[in-house]
Amino acid sequence: MSDKKTKSMWMSTLSNRAQELINNLGIPADMGDRIKDFMFEVAREQYKAGNSNGIRWARTNPQPIPQT
Image (tube, rainbow, N blue to C red; front, top):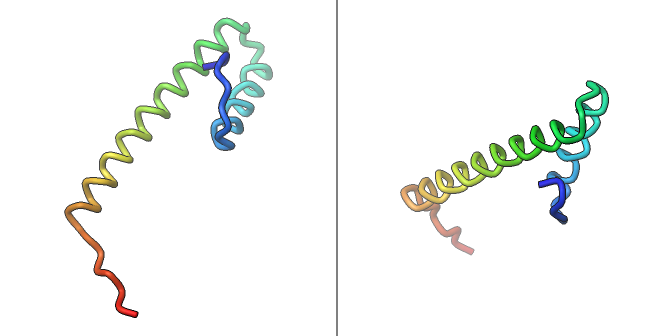
């Protein structure tokens, strides 16, 4: 993940905060990259799971269209 560019603000913020923590703990760069890759993999999996559940919920619980 460390070599890929992204335009997502939350992703940039998360990456910067993780890098700051890695630096403060004195973790070597290669280990820090592995930690960040793991962290982003988990975040991606959780996003996909939440998105799928949200879509499923929306399909089973349609909202009424407001009358104007």
